[in-house]
Length: 158
Image (cartoon, rainbow, N blue to C red):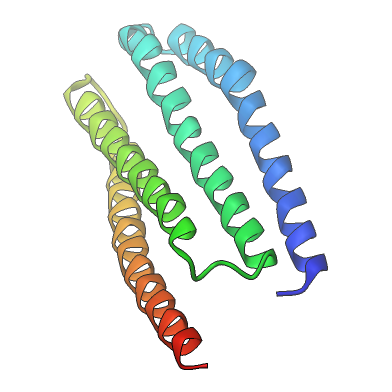
C-alpha cells in the first residue's frame, strides 16, 4: 500500500475519532435531554440511552484505533506477523460488544410504551450488521493467520 494512502486513511481515522468524541460529550447528552422533554413517558430511558450510546461510540473508537495500528503494520511491511492478531481480536471484541449493546437497546425499547416500529426495525438491522461484521472479522482473522503462516514458510525456504 502506498504511503500516501496510509497517511490519508490515518487522517480520516483521526477526524472520525474526534467527531465521535464530540458526539459523546455534546450530541448524545443533548439529544437525549431533548427527546426526554418531547416524550415524557420515555424520559426514564434518558440515562440508559446516553450510557449505551457512549459505550457504543467507544467501541467504534476502539475499532478505529485498531485499524490505525494495522495500517502502521502494513506500512512497516509486517502485517503478516503475530503482532497483527491482537489488534484483530480487539476489533472483534469491540464489534461483539457493540452488537450486544444494540440487542440491549432493542430489549429496552421493545418494552417501552409507544415505541416506533421503525426504531425497532433499525435495531434489528443493527444486530444483523453487527453479527455480519463479527463473522467477517473471524473470516479475515483466519485469512490473516493463513497468510502469516505462508509468509513464514516462504521465508524459511528462501
